[in-house]
Image 1 (cartoon, rainbow, N blue to C red):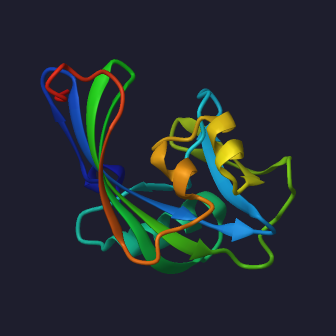
Image 2 (image 1 turned 30 degrees about the horizontal axis):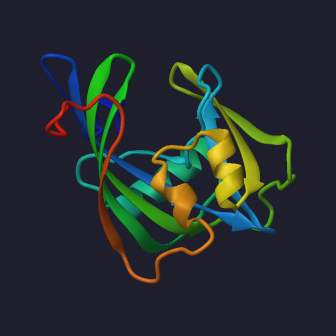
Length: 173
């Protein structure tokens, strides 16, 4: 599908809505994270949903595009209404976070960058980090509630409203 099929809407002034799907893959006590090389923060791999595909299909497609790997999409961990401020814009993101399994052939190293890919105008880099609260807090990985839950993942789907960034006194962007 083409880039213009991705679910993202722009509103004035400087407000954006998007639907983002991400996966948490674990290996040897580590979790896979990625970032655009021009960013200081890391995130969990994934991307925007496209019209007509389920969230699990989005995650599977994004991992083929970004990792060149077919993943097994596991159970949904969190459904998040995420409100944040980024690049001078107010974002309202509907996020779905799944467990996922990567093939054993996918590279692992406990500290080095293990994969790079060009994604549109961004170069992405991937690495494994310890799946601990302290390690995720040190890396600045939004949404930040995941660091607090990484060592004890929910056993059923958890719905959250997460507000981060520039909010007014009433809690609105």
